[in-house]
Length: 426
Image 1 (cartoon, rainbow, N blue to C red):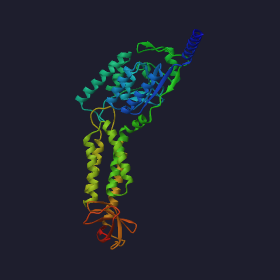
Image 2: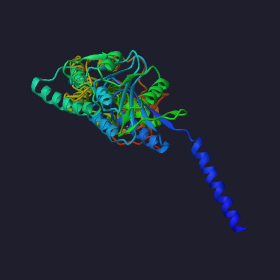
Image 3: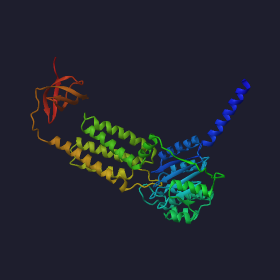
Image 4: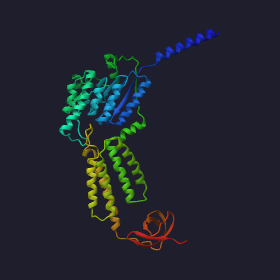
């Protein structure tokens, strides 16, 4: 009886196993790579590749749309693609997308390179982040380094190295049709489904074996984690710059108007996020210090009567600090006036307005009676000065003795709009 039961159990297990094997559809995983080539894109690719291995995918499609980015990140992504055990298809899509600058190298590294109609590829000339050309000696060194990388990538898949070289040497860009005619890519696909159909019909070889897909192949779309998406926005050069400026602006407002709290809190958060992004991006310490110096000048403008000279000096520091904000060494990323101009103008206007309002308040004639003899309560106090609340109003105050918040005080005099107070006798 036990032998019969064992045989039936084994037979059932074999049937279930065979059935599950047959109904399990093959999978292709689509990973979106959009935006600047940066550490955030590296993280999305890592997560996608792990998911592909977990799903036992037949191959991976990287949907690419990028203006370029960091050379360091580009090299790491190329290395990941080359060493990934599954075939990797790089698909420049959707219509209107482009793979410029660092994106060229990602296309060249693909096992199968595909473009959608009305897409472009090229313009990979190394430039400084300010958008200027690099000096001749440095330019040649960088070009030779990038050309050697492209040469090895193109030789691997027998792609047209001459056209790829023109992307660097001549800043050339080509359309999808030109790319396929010149053997820069493998073919053109109008959609993801068309891409899969052509992969199956062409049966191209990748990673040492032909890509043969099942008719019931399932296309899955990888959804990056919220942190990877957040990081991709955070590490955009313009976003990092604006967060840094916004953080400094919030702290400046808190220093000029203590006790408001909210601007200081928001500014602190923005500054921490901005500094995190800047620790990864290729920043220039001189540019950052110039911006800090500009904020210091604006603070001094409030404290010292300089007839606007300190404010002008602060604005000059902000302009030069913004221009030199990122490292000027070679990278496939541009940084010029069009990238930071609007943020800089907005911050200048806000800083100027705050300084003007504070200065106006300091010289304004006192129109309301000073609460001499009135009693109040300490709100903020440090180093024998702070703020008190009298008659429901906040006043700046100073005293010859140290006080604590919530202590009762009495106004005995004033100097301008600053009250002289003493501790109330019990």
